[in-house]
View 1: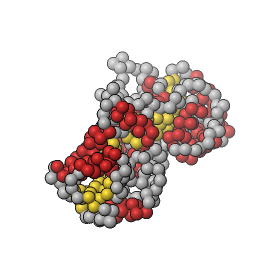
View 2: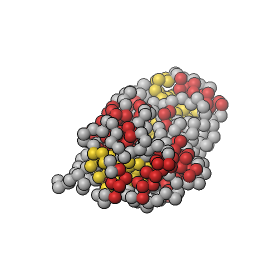
View 3: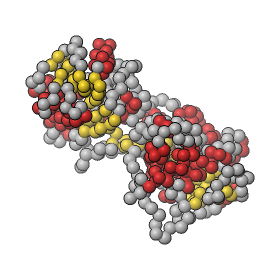
View 4: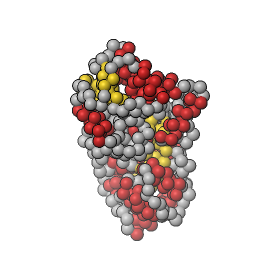
Length: 465
């Protein structure tokens, strides 16, 4: 099997993967050589040959640091190694013995251009002791470029928890073997800087989470027409502006026909958007491929009735915004669903479905996906997607400018449009999340939700063959 460079592993799975490599005939020392030399090469290239300080801990992360330092010396780079603790694993001891340069103690505070943090890696579960915390932060302050090996020291790999308040931010984090959940989870993710990955041969692991990647969206078939491309019904509510925003994004995301269902025609409906004032009776149209309900719906008894009608149509559906606050375990319908909660809506859903709300965001999203039989896109600065059966997709950090009113309405419209195209709830959520982030990237800074919706078509072009 080939190495899988898009999977995201927890600590236990990473240890098992390394054990499998060793059992398959690759010595642990050889794995350390691959990882350490790659780290050293990143430090050499990013630092443009400037002096490097390597901070080594007692475990195999420290061993990687000694190998990196040896690689740097072999390439003529000035290296200062600081042993924060003496090596305690056989591999780290061997790596230390093979490094022929000077090793200083934890009292050293060299000034240099590049700091390579090899203090602790993904196995850390407790805060750094005070002496190591002050050593790390002090070294970070006097180096202009900071590189972390696998994870910045002081980060819990599975949850993304920052174990020591005040940890320094890094410019680059070089993951070793596979991505860890902390690379994409708050509050740790902003401390990582740019992310890079070293391949040590870890094979694909069944059930592992994956990083969201650029989708491959096919253009319409040569004989396509508006219905074959997908008819999306957007159910408007008390505040139709949100539904109009969703519909605009949906029109630019691939569906052939987007129809707004409203009891009266709201102001501001663009000429290209059909508004059906027969309203919920239109849900009986067998040509409807998907439904979006929630943006601007309201939370009144009338809104609850509109949600029930949308779900009773039993078509693939995206449930967003106010509809999430009204959804119940006993809600009708069995067609594929995508739920798109932010943290507050997630808490309401957990209460409605009798869930504990305990554990990481990943664990909570998986629990809701199983309980609701729906794909769950848990929104936030560390958005992720969970599906019934255990599939998890984590998203790279998107633009912080997405934190603008209406951004979620745009996302819901994109997902619903993709769902109307093909009917696959998990794929629609993945495509929609990527397109949303790409549209934000193209918008630049300080954009409105309207700008974001308008940029969706340009984002879609980036996913075409």
